[in-house]
Structure formats: C-alpha cells, structure tokens
Image (tube, rainbow, N blue to C red; front, side, top):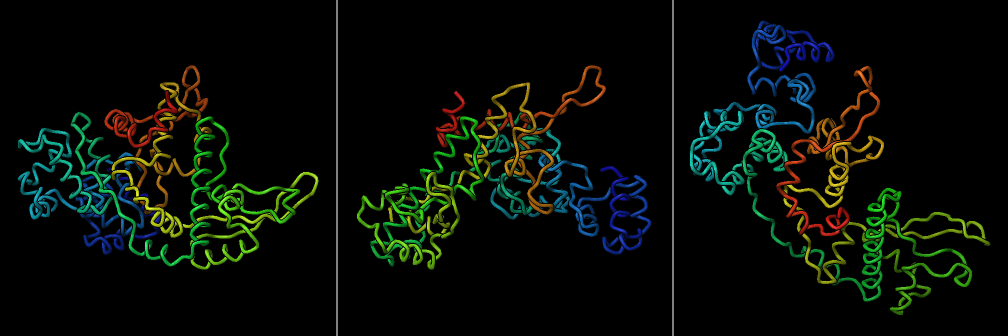
Length: 404
C-alpha cells in the first residue's frame, strides 16, 4: 500500500487526521505514521480506513478492479490471517486441511502449503467456497484471485450445480391460466427464443445488434388492414393454432395484468401506407418461468459459479481470436466490460469484473506517444480459457463452433 494514498484520500474526504483516527479507532499519531509510510495498517484497519474515507479497500491498496489476489480479498474483509484460520477451523474443510495462520500466509504468497490434501483440487474447491463465505464475496472472485495468486496450481474443483425443477408457484400459475392464455404465452416465449437466436447469429457475423431491451419487444400486430400489411410472425403462429381473432387484445391485457408480459406501442413506417401504430409484447421473467413450467421444461441451472455466461464467454473468445495484435478499443463496449475488463466494476461498491481482458497501449516509434489502445486477454483470462475450454465447448456448442 502506498502511504501517500491514505493522505490523498483523507484530504479528498475533507477530514483531519484526528477525525480519521476517531473513525478508525486509533490515535492521530498512528494515522500520521501511516501517511508517512513508517507503519503499514493491519488488515482490519485497512477495512476501517476504507469505511471511514468512503472508498474501497482497492482504492487504498492500489489494486485495480479485476486484479485482486487472495491477500487483497482478506484485506477487503478486514481479517488477519489468524482470524481467517480460526474461523475456518470450525468448518469441515478447515479441519480436514489443518488450517493455521501460517498456511493462510503461504497460500497467499504462492508458496507450497504443507499437507497432502492441499494438493487435491476437490479439497481446495471446498476451501474456495468457505473463503467466499468468510470474505463475503462471490465464489468467482475467490477462484479468480486463487488463479492469479497461484498460477501453477491445478484450479480448484467446485461441485456442479444440480438441475432445478420448476418452482411450485410457476406450475400453479400456469395451471391457473385458461387454454387461450397458455397458447399466447407459450408462443410469445418461442418467438422470444427465435429472436434471441437471430440476434446471436447477427453478433457472430459482426452485424450490428440493438440492445436487448429493444429486440426483446416483439412485434405483435400492426394497426392497419391485414390485406395491406400482412401478419406478424406471432400472429401467423396463433392463426395456425386457431386462437388469433378479435379477442387478441383482451388476452394480451389479461396476461399483462398477471405480470407475465409487458405490452407497449410504437409507430413504424409502412411503404405505401405511411406511419401506423404497432403493438409490441415482451415476456417477463415471471412469464418465462410460468411458460417453461407449463411446457414441462426443466429450469436450466446457471453456469457454475466460476464460469461465464454464453454472452460473456463469446466476448472473451472474440478477443482471444485476434491473437497478439489485440482488438481495437472501439470494437468492445457496453456492459461486457464491467464484467470482464481490468479496472471496471458495475458500480462503485459492486464486486469487480473478472479481469479477463485489458486495454494495452500501442506506442508510436520511439515511444513518443500512444497511437491507440487495443483489447488483449490477460494472463488470468488465458489461464481461464486453457483450464475450462473443454467445459465451455460442451456448455455452449454454438459459441465454440463460431470460432472454428
């Protein structure tokens, strides 16, 4: 930790050394020693300093978001190695590994930890879960910090998540719908999936893709004669099922009252006619759960805690595919950066990104100035790909095939 950071953050917060000392529970002389670099704050005081200054522990330690190692997580929790060891010893994995403060420090310094079971990834996987609970962070953060700290270790193994059965409330909700409402909700779900697949194909071919909040709103009907504008894809399927008639509006509004869909209006230009009103429908999370329960579909478990969603995995593959030259900074934008890029976090107090990609400067000849910035996969990102590529290929075969 740079001692100048404490003074800078204190001055930015507009507090004196005495006020800061009172908030942290130390003397003003101790704060002065910290700011002069004569002493380093202990883990518990780093956390108290961050709370007192209204910043994160990363602001004090200088660790970029998405670059945390195991010791950073412990400091962020405000715990000493002795406190971590004592709390782990009340758990089964702590007892199995005979955890003590010295082993915690050796773990954090990438040194060999004595004990046969410390070499077994099934045991270290259990330890990762306990550390996540102890540090009050997601399991993925501990996994990433572990792999940054100990790059030569075999990654810990986390237990797979079980298939989930539909919630009882979703099954009961579906059973309470009439046949017509069920048909409408099921077809809206199918159209949503079809649109999602189309957006995925466009993304893989580098075509522009609108935000999900736009394409999730599915065209249902145009306020114009059908002989002039035809039928939407949703209307065609409902017509084939024999349930598209003058009662469509009432059915949509009944589903909206149950918070299964959202109904919206906009206007669009139709050649030869001009602007016409259009009805849009969007299935809600509740509606999706009811429809899946009614169609007998098991609820897909989320990816294992340390793995990425298909969307984020596709972004990492895209950066990795360009190799050493990197991807121009303008090629990536949006929310993916807050989940993947070093230095990003969704909100100030939110958990940091995975740190799988980073921006690196391209210097002009003679290093006189920066020509541009390009995205590259970090060392941890490369480790993650190498360790779990076979798992992702099975989970997301579409993403794997798109990179061939």
